[in-house]
Length: 439
Image (tube, rainbow, N blue to C red; front, side):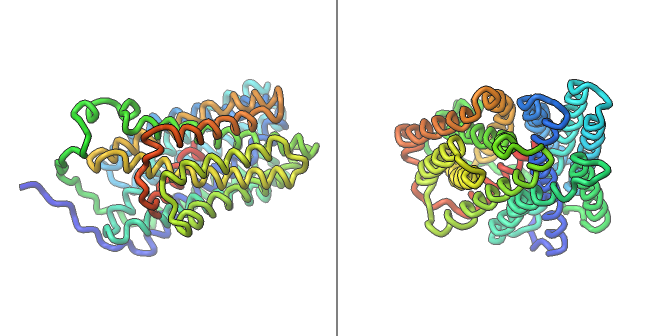
């Protein structure tokens, strides 16, 4: 007779606070770093498109290593994997700070600095990815099903909060003696402090392997559909195409925004840093408003989210492309972030509803891959920005309008189950965005 799954008990508030802190620290550090990258690149002399490329290798390593770390957490427990992830994050941030410091002091050619920066950041993609599956699994194992949606939503809130706090703190950490390397050095110290808290105070998860349960195929599912990769499954493919394009546009806009603000204001990279942080904070708050407020307030369905999300994002990109003032840039970026905050739960919920219960894990893996790989294309948009400043935002607008047409014309998207998107869908989308922003 197979073993049954252990009955989950309520997660103690102290343990959840620690898990929340792990996610918060990671999100703060990564978004804080993104906010200072344009200023770092301009100060050292690294071409803008290569600055965006700093995240590309890390993104590929994250996508490749995440399944390995998820399996390792099953074998070795959740707490050790969180420790590995925090160590990877702290070491990567410290290495990035040292490399940036060397670049700011002109100790090496900018190309050497770029390569070292790329490798230092890659440490996070390789080892920092360990903590994300471990934190989610820890919460799930210690939370009864009736409380799991609320718990996972609260955990997702750590990422959303981090995207607001990180850009706010980054300018405060630009210290006289280390300059733009300061934010990364301070985020490394914060991560080490969190590492001590996890090691000292977090109980190990009472993880036990559970005998897999066989489930009947979903209606319409075939044996071939189960065998083929999810990205080739006709039920899921339209959602993955839609999600990939949306993720590409959101990442491209975020990576290009800092350069636009520096050029718009005509200030030095360091002087413009505070203005970049303000814009990113407004965007993060707009994204939280859509996922924590608008979706639940109006009980929007996946089909509505797929349409409204890209329509609003297209409007925001239009405003950013032809902005007359800095305030218009901030407003356009916030509107775009609001739209992306609607679109992402739309394709996440829609793809989940398109497959059977026994295929949820594989579908989630396909969505995670989409959110990881898109980061590699960001340098191309920054390269386009160097040629014509408005071009990447106009291209984003065109792509969003194309996805709007696709959402109406494609049968799978047009007939997405008109069931209101749940809080769990919003939480999942926030978690996925944090993965992308972490890369």
